Every structure is written in structure tokens, then in C-alpha cells.
Image (tube, rainbow, N blue to C red; front, side, top):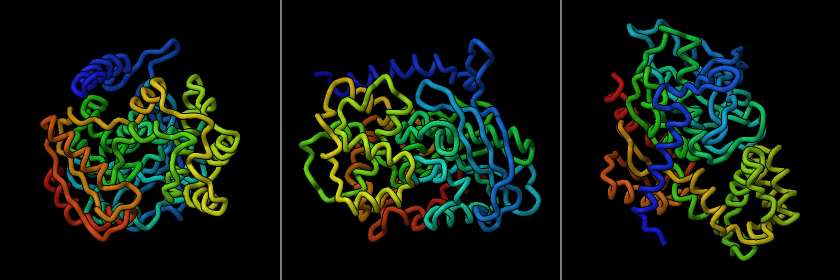
Length: 384
């Protein structure tokens, strides 16, 4: 068995090779047979529906830009750009890149089409009131071709970085080069990755730090436990999350042949998940009493799938070169606090510095709102 330190060393070497091959050290410009692929290059832009505008929004645009689909494959992502009302300050509006929580895999679930729910629109509106521009990736595949690569951290992190570059291409001197990333839940997972890679992926910008709210970690050790013997623990949300992960792998990594471990029912529900937003999928799972074990024909616990989940989901525990803030509620039943405690312990062991705020009596979806005063103090200290 390879020790944890040995695994970390190997992962670091592999990551270095991968990042070099992607050109991340030079602003993510990758030469192809046809033309260079530039991370964040603006593909198109157009009007957003007024129904998705946060309060306090001045100029807005829906953008489509070049970014990652998986750790080593390129594609497009859509997203939203919101500028505050009024005239920009000298040097331009500083930018918050916001990464949203789980909404689904279908295009109609994208925030640039449907807007944000209460637990996410309120922080965005506060940032706008406080004089920050907000850019919000939909994630590649959610609003663009293909299926969302759910919890594929390198891709989601890149999506959150690259939309800042796209916004600068669109708005020029209206935006300051100073920016931060913040995310909730699925977006918290993305914010870890974005914060880890931001300064090398977009070196022309002035990245100041990350805010991770209820971001799931150590999922690479949990997902391989899936199989026909997985016990019924009564958390139907796990079924929905698993289906989105499986649908993303099936679409973006067909060579992995994830269907070989799925039951006929699992394949049926994976296909269904592609077209349903999270709320509708969860209601149908509960109505039909679908259990996680019923999705599988055999165990996912194989070296190949274990390596796949680790590549996709394993959150970095060191290498952060800008301040990091982590927020978690002990009352969260969606992302259990034990996962965050494990991540914090791993980061401490590796010498990573971070600010941590722990809440109680706050649900998963309200954690960002409940922690906004302290988060704003953290952001203002780094950005002003």
C-alpha cells in the first residue's frame, strides 16, 4: 500500500506534468492543430433575461467562453456578468467570481437562464451593493454542449477562473484586475480548485483569495463505495448526486465505460438525470424510493474507478498561494461537517494557512447568507 505522503508526492508530480501540458503556467494557452486555445476567450455574448437580474445590477451580459470540460479536454461554458449600478471607481470594479451550488445537469438548470435561488442571489446582491462586479459561471456543459461534468474539480475550477478573463475581454477597463472566487456546495468544491490554480491560470490578473462555503471534500473516498451492497442510509440526495456524477462521466469520459457497473435501473435513472434539475430529480427519486444500491450491478471499488474519482474530486490540501476562507455549518446534512474537518486537518498537516468559520443551526443552503458579514470583512480586507 502506498502511504499518504507517497500518494501526495505522486499526485504532485502527475499534476505538474498535467498542468505543464495544459499550458497553465503561461496563462492557459494551448496550441492545437488548428489554432491556439486560449482559456477564457470570449466566444459570444448577449442579453440576459431581466428575470435573472439581481437587485442593484447595472450592465449585464450572458457570455460563452473557452474553458475546460475535464482536466485535459477543452470546451465552452456559459455564464453571467453583472456590473454594479453607477460609475465604476478609479481602476475599475473589483470582481467576485461566484460558483453556484448543485442545480442539475440540463441546460434549463443554468443560472444564466433561470437565475439564482434565495441562498445564492442574496450574497450576489450584497456584493453588487458593496461595489463588486460579479461573474458567475454556469459550468461547462450546463448551458452549453454536452452534460455537466459534475464534481470534476479541475474543470469547474477552470470555469470559475476563465469567466473572469472573458469578462475582462468584454468590459475592458471597467473591471479591475483584482478578483476573488467564492462558491457554495458544488461551487465550494470548484472554489478550492479555482483558488489553487488561479495565479498560474490567469497570471495577468490580480487574484486575492478564495471563499469556500460548505464545499464537499474527500468524495473520492466515498463514491467508490457505491455498489449493490451499499446500505440504505435514508439520504435520498446522495442518489441524485451520484446520478449527476455518473451522467457526467458517461458523457465526458466514455472510455471509462461507467455503464459496465450500472444496473438497468441505474442506466435508466442516469439518462433521466441528464434532463432534470436537482429539485425535480430529488422529488422523483423520493416518490419512487430509489436507493443508491439499486443503481449498480457490481461494486465500483476497483483501482481504475478509484483513480478516476481521485483525479476528478480530490481537493488540494496544499499549494494555495493566496488566502483561503472556509465556512461550514455543523447542522449541514448535505455536506457533513466531518468531511470539512478532515479537509482542514489535512491542510494543517501540510502547512496550509486558512481562515475557518463554523456555524450551528444553519442549513446547507443558507450557510453563505449566514456568514456574509464575516465573509465581506475577509473580502474587503484583501480587495480594497
